[in-house]
Length: 341
Image (cartoon, rainbow, N blue to C red):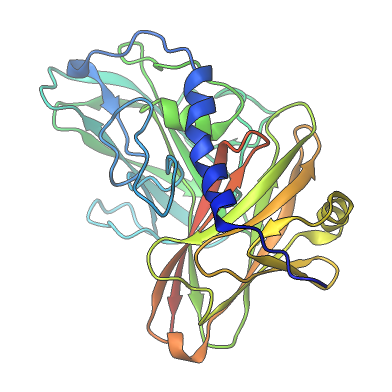
């Protein structure tokens, strides 16, 4: 199979275009006065602005799926601050931090709603009580009643983790008559999160590797819209590259791989390997282009990670992002990779 390379500049153009289309399409309601605003960070650089400001390169758009204000612990102890992958079938505790702005006045009450879905780059949102979208309720309807003082607060919600052998992402939503959504919510979780500081998305996966022992991570990709569309998958490091010393392969599965072949197997810094797999070749940025999805469809892919001998003791962050047909960010996953001996 031939290697598929295009100029790196094409990927940059695709990613920077994310911001223009979305900004033009959103119509805000009246923003909540800062004195009563309750908010959560989309990323460590988030300062409560709506929409969230983009983070610096190597990502040229809003990072809205790795909120530091949501983390999972095996205990309800407030001193637990280290995010862990929840064990399937176990009782875990989701910690959610709610902030107030500088100059906050009085207490603000509302309900904190918490949802989970199978880990993936995109997820369809319908409503907090929907039974048809991609999100499943954790907190119970209508959510956990919470009073947020001017100093902010932390809410801890127990979660009986599903027994299915998979990973999960989490969504927190602050619902308050005093502090409503600034922008109307639509079907895309990424845009809802980007434009409203009442919503935070945590899609972070910790992967423990050992040299030359591949680990497969299931990742759902999806189309939240009712009509068919083509999407792209971008993979790139934040900080030190993993590819080069290590190896990354995306397994599209038989159905999606067949569709990709029909579109011409286009990509940047990637090469098809075998019937269903795509190897990431460029350590800095790679793009699998033109993956066809039906309306409201969600398909499973696998990310296979293999560490090299010289990566022992290393820590890497590999970001996987889905771009829609307009090159707008539809969501993503941060893979925190630790390499042991």
